[in-house]
Image 1 (cartoon, rainbow, N blue to C red):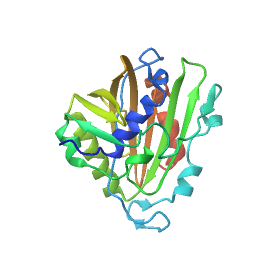
Image 2: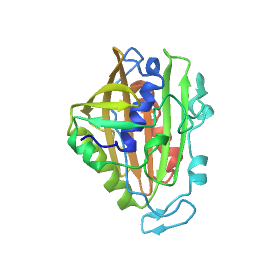
Image 3: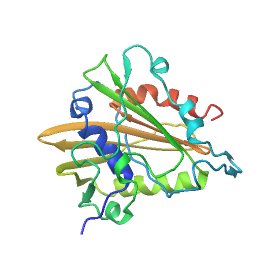
Length: 240
C-alpha cells in the first residue's frame, strides 16, 4: 500500500502542478540538474542550538537571507505564497511505484516545505522568459541533521527513475535523473525531474547546497537555477 509522501516530493510536485506552464520544457534552459530534500524535525524553531559548525539560524534570520526581486534583477516578480489547505485538495500526496520513497513516509504534507522547523521561502515569476519560475528555500539545523536528511531523500529519489505521484486526485508521472552537482558549499545535490500531467511535460531543476548549518534549495527553470544558485548561497551563507 503506497504511503503518504515526504514533503520533498510535495515541494517538487506542487511547484509544477500549481503552474505547469512555468515548468514547461520549452522554458529557457542550460545544463540540467535538480532534486528534493527532507529531514527529521529538530528542536523548536524559537530555540537556539549551538554546534561546532556554527549557529543554527532562526526562521526570521533565514528570511533576511532570502533572495529578493532586487537581488535577482530586472524581470523578476514576487509570487504569492500558497496557503496550506487551500486549492482543490492538493495537500494529500501519495507516491506509487517507488518503494524507497514510500518507506520514508512523512508528516509535513500540506505546506510544500521540507521537515526542518527553521525555514524561509520566496518564489518569483520571471517575466523575461516564457512564464519561467524560480523559488529559493532556506533551512537551518545541525550539520549532521541537514546532511543525513538531505542525502537520504536524494538517494531515495535517485533509486526510482520513474514513479507516480498522486496529488489530490491528480496523477503525475515523475521521471528523475541524477546529475553532476556544482562545486559549491560543503555538500551539494542536484537532479532533474520531469513531470507529466494531463498530457503535458514539465521540467524542474532543483539544486540543494549545504554550507555549515544552512541548507539552500533553489528550484525552477533549469536556466534560472543555474544562474542564481551561487547568488542564493552567497547571501544565505556569506562565510561559505
